[in-house]
Each structure stands twice: as structure tokens, then as C-alpha cells.
Image (cartoon, rainbow, N blue to C red; front, side, top):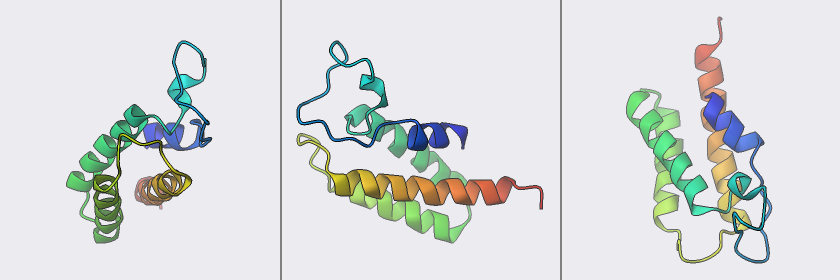
Length: 103
């Protein structure tokens, strides 16, 4: 959960006009438009999908993973794609927080 929170709230939603470069931009690793950021999120959500028995969360993650299968990875990310990722991460974080709450 902490990893997802860090990636959701500490990474950058901005869509640069040109491809970000780790030699030119000190914030390179924080951009959500990077394919590696996406792969990291997809991998984490796949694990949660396998481990959870919550059908609502499984559906959210399944829908998001299906969405990512339609992404053209050779193109720049779009606002819609980043918003969709943020929404899925938000829902998974909320579920994990609720599950881990002492109540």
C-alpha cells in the first residue's frame, strides 16, 4: 500500500511536450507518463488481483488491466490514461486502508 501511495501522490501527472529524458530532467523518475512507471503499477496491481478475494477490487483491477492492454505504448501517454491509472490506484488504496484499519 505504501508503494502505491508513493507512486500515486509523489509522482508527476504532467504531460511534457516532448519525451522526458533522465539526463535532462532531474524529476525523470517521477513522471507517470513513463512506460516503466506504468509497468510498475501494472505489476503491483496484478499481484493484488491474485491475492484479494474482494470482488469489487478484483473487478476494478481487472478493468484497469484490460484498459492497459489497449494502450499504444509507442505513443505518449494521455490525460485520460493517467486519470484512469490514478482512479484505479485510489480505489485499491482505499480498499487496502479499509482492510488494514483496526476496526
